[in-house]
Image (cartoon, rainbow, N blue to C red; front, top):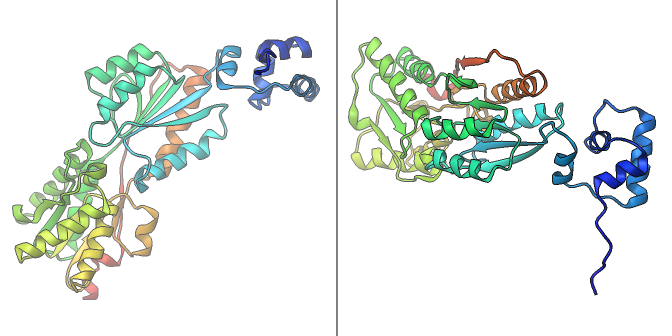
Length: 341
């Protein structure tokens, strides 16, 4: 037979402790703005009543945001993991719970539209989601604090990544290292970030009057994570092999692609950098152990900066917006060191 005991609520805890429900909420959320004596009184009431707080109860007891949703195309790739680490480490300073919403990498804009229909978050950080008119309407109608990472829009706080400059730095580096015939492994699924990287890479080839060899611009067949994966890089190398011709050096759209390409080249007996140069993009942790030249997007730092800005919006509701474009930097390592060959 089921118990007929009524569920204890936050209101009963407040009545028992002789405090406001907002005070109980602050104690539950470990707010520093409660005296030691009051905390002890509230905790005693919680223990006496055997109260188990839930997110819904906390929300009822406070007008401040309680839940941060991070909308991201994938949370299993190293690039997004680095951004999420920055958010996670900085969020410790804020009184928020976190939920990660995977929008999917093939159509993240549709995914975030579905997310806003649910209306489950009090505040949002989006990562690598382009803001078209449909998404913009969803964001506006939600009327909650929002910060964008890896995209931009004039109506929002954002930290955009300068992918075009990153692509240019990659092309410039390979050319200055003495490589002539350059290849580029693109993702199988077209993305705004990848297109900007490609355009930047082509800008460098044109500026230094280098040939653009179209057949050396190719992708793997894998569409998982939009084709930024190890599998995609591995597959692309075997396309070069089937072609019977390799570039002097290859720029990969991501470090994970470069890792797959690295493995494929090793299987074919092609030495790096003696036979071919290779570089990636993102500067994930594993790239340093491969001695892989790459482009650092400052992913962790961007996650921290976006979360700090979100805290400012929640606490002070500033009228001005922070809208920054983060310039990447080249990390030159041995995988493109032509002077050693």
